[in-house]
Length: 70
Image (tube, rainbow, N blue to C red; front, side, top):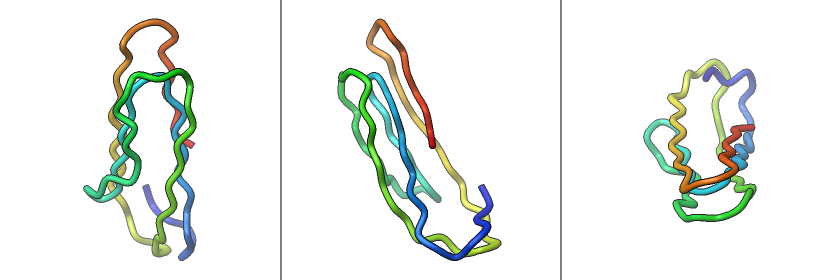
């Protein structure tokens, strides 16, 4: 992703079961558990014009698979 502005960004995941979110190799969200739909958030200061590697990992242990990155 490319940051449009130099500011603090909020990353939000909504998941039913495990989720991990990494930005430039740094883990910013870690909820690697079985759970119902849950919202996790993290903030990170980004620099305008810089490109960042974003990686989302998830698993579903059964029923109602949900994963969203906002």
